[in-house]
Length: 219
Ligand code: DX5
Ligand code: ZN
Image (cartoon, rainbow, N blue to C red; front, top):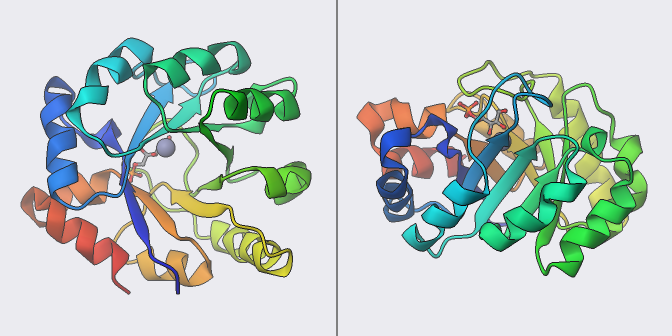
């Protein structure tokens, strides 16, 4: 079983202390920082944009795993790359030309992720699986932290892992939404190697981040 990585979502952090919260996550053993960007259009919530990401960049050396829940996304990719994103994950529904957006992110020297909403099938990205670094499988409908995990996505994770193994591909399988101590084992056994979590990491065990991160990656 390859190493399980944890990408805590700062959506559940204290937004008045984001820099310190990122340092707490790094001290607690986070592998990367999941930054949920929402535009109030693609999803019914509005969070942060490039200026805040730029301001947070110096808080940590950890990779910024930036999840763009914005549309249209293509014309904004460069500003997130320049702000300090290391992984830029987009939703296929948010671009008119997925191939062009993938190439654009790569041309900026960033890792490229594609996110599949619970109702979006693998087929729409199958042709790109050999040229992307990460598939972000949403286990909630995007827009908010603290939602309930949708168990039906476990089949999608297994199907994706089967394709990855059959074609000997190297993309990471990251799962995002409602991940907790009751479903982390199921998600990892289904084939995920990166878990995103906000609520469980910041709220469980009286906010003991290290304990929560260690518990999520242990099965
Ligand atoms: C939801 C975001 C998720 C969310 C995860 O749209 O993409 O990253 O913040 O938060 P929890 O772990 O609380 O579901
Ligand atoms: Zn996310």
